[in-house]
View 1 (tube, rainbow, N blue to C red):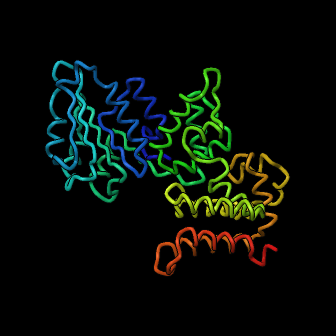
View 2 (tube, rainbow, N blue to C red):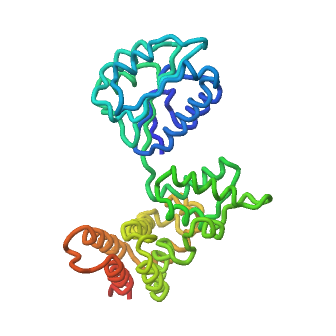
View 3 (cartoon, one colour):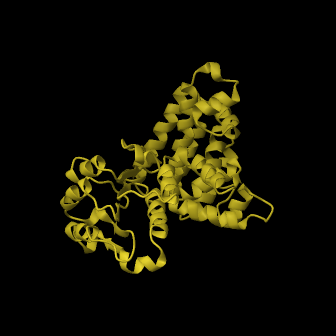
Length: 352
């Protein structure tokens, strides 16, 4: 997810890309944040289109933060282009630079014939320092991104697929979200594989297609585990737990706990929503921020887990997470911890 900058020209990822594709370049770009996928795409678009292949020979300069200093990059940015209308100076892994002071003066008077692209990977610049404040005060573009939250991943998948001319069914989005997590680089790569795997006349990404091309199972996954627990289907829940135990590398405990936490947090949100919305599928789904396809599961779970029991379930998941990261677990394996957690979630007296 992209944060909105205080600068109008940095209003969002899509707007920045639209400007670049139309040939409307800024004198400098400061790209930073937790999620590098956005910065990767912006940088790739600029690199591909700002110069012709012939112009790149003399006018494309690439630096890495671990191999240079701020003065070197600024000096390169102040040069005039050779046999071209502009030059492109790219600084990658800027977070490795020990000193950024030289850029402050440059941002106030950048070279009109230079496009300076500064990329922080997986990190943001110190917003208290002169580097960031000067970049924000100048006429360039400052863009910061944050990692997606678990509940935002399926929607991102659906939007990305739609932008490429494809649709995804809700279960396919959930499976892919579980398989990839919030890593947008991995998600976009897997989605492109799925696009190529669809038939010539099909533009729909199905759960079956995801299963066939990623190895994730429609039956054995953390989403189905959460649903089995809140539906009271103990046989299916323990069947999934057993499968997870025999494939610990494919189903790491931490990812499973994260998915269960997300599942029960949606129940918490359901209990907090205005009761007048209940019965109105569209309004309730919108209030919960989820696809209406999943609303029936939430409603079923909410009948078995009242607010108090849902809060207790969240506490149990947190406790299991804490135990898994400490000596408190004793000799219990990840599979043992998950089996005990699921047993407590299902058979707690308050759910009988």
